[in-house]
Length: 324
Image (cartoon, rainbow, N blue to C red; front, side):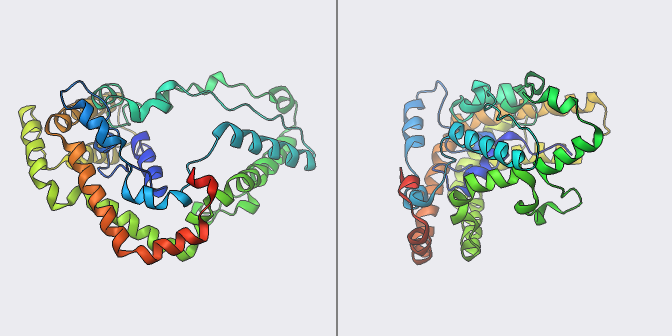
């Protein structure tokens, strides 16, 4: 089974952080933010205006929303803490610069949906992450590490990353994760506190379930039918928007890793073709705008129903930094 595609990973992150325009549709072209942000149709300006609107839940909870802050500053803080920690452990560690990213990684959400589908499919066939060449990076400590004996290298690795190889990932303990985990905890823990508080786990689960309900909302039935008719014209047989993405996800989930390259190539070709048709039909029928309309309505209903719980969460964790 292949790893989760960039589109889904990004969507999950957006959902957990209560992003303004969550990916409620599951696939990259189903996002109310990304799908309505490009194209050359006559409704393009309207789509951009729609995507620019702040969602009710995002607006309501922005005071406890953490978007990662200044990534360069955070990275530098982490690296300096690692260096100090490793020095205490008796090792050298040179703080590393933040790796450069391809422009497309930052522009993912801003790309025209059809262009994105043509280039990446749904995210398995390709992704901005795949454009990062790991061989371009050379550790400033390469010579220092190469001169180590096997036992010294093992001790260095334990100091840096800890020794939890045999522990289930759900049971990882940052205090046993070496200097790397220590540094990341110091830099990021306070910013994530609101989302790690067990008192609000049930509320966050309710939020997740609310977003999951968006694509199945009865108010999308008519536009799903219009999208389905459009897809049928291109030779695809799907009743609902999510089915296009899910069919490809199922393909990757069931294709053995041992399958030959021809099988993988055929599936990637199928992914790209499906994603392109999906993006074009969503744009044609105005699905992103309708999806956003329904999502915003459900968010407001959620706020009205859970106002007391949300207010308690906000009161406990609101910060001026997060509200900016």
